[in-house]
Image 1 (spheres, chains in turn green, cyan, purple, orange):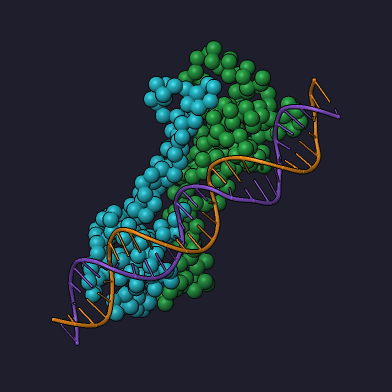
Image 2: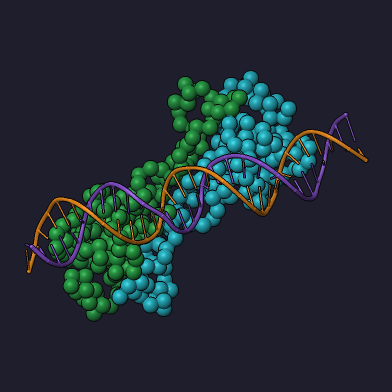
Length: 155
Length: 155
DNA sequence: CTTACGCGGATAGTTGACATCCGTGATTGA
DNA sequence: TCAATCACGGATGTCAACTATCCGCGTAAG
């Protein structure tokens, strides 16, 4: 799985506790990752409507919606795309006993099982929001540090 | 996701309805896929203990256990490995406000969420067996064809 | 009008999946 | 005994995707 997924989720958590736009520069520095590459992931979040951008001199990223309305699934799909990890190549139609396309209006049993598993995966991620993660981080961070982080994000 | 996963599951379904060892040559021809590459996947199944091999002139592959004791999950993990798709790089320890390793005895919240989703995915795959899939295939195939396939697998 | 910033395109390096080939050892049938 | 068939593992090549960087453009604050 794409490493940008981890970065994007952490960025959304940070953005949920920031009070204004945070630049890609700051987000990259905060997490100790490549600025140029993180910018690509942030652009994906922007295209997906998860964050809004303000261009210009004091530009940066802000969450488009309240953090409790942004599921982890939305962030993952914004980076990884919405295509299923398993894709059926219909090998049941191949070979000497291959089924004809007319017999294959119903999806392949293998594909059905894999699709159900991916639905379970998505359902699990859909039930957790950025707000949930932010609350967990806040509970593990003492108050002076939280204030310092808030100041550091908007220099 | 690895295409070998799809091949391996279909091969196990075929093996469940065969009465003797089936060679990689036959399995590849049956599914219309590359023989040499399918052999690699079958070797993975062998190492995982899902199939047993008989070498020599009339060698081939047989399911090690009854089909209703072989879960789809076991086949998937034999091909894809047991590593989680998401791997946490602990970026919470990076940057100016990075948490110290002592504070990170508890797993990262992001990693916890992703791990839970993968557990749900595995649980879904664990509840379906090769026998379930074989039954579905049998129900969609007329009897003469089933007999012909059985003969074709052992020339 | 200078500076900082987001955006998109172009460009490599690296990794892993996909695919093939060959040599080895084992077993069966002639 | 000997040739054919098969599983196995190593080595190799190809290709797409991920990772990473750079540059030019448009935008907005100071």
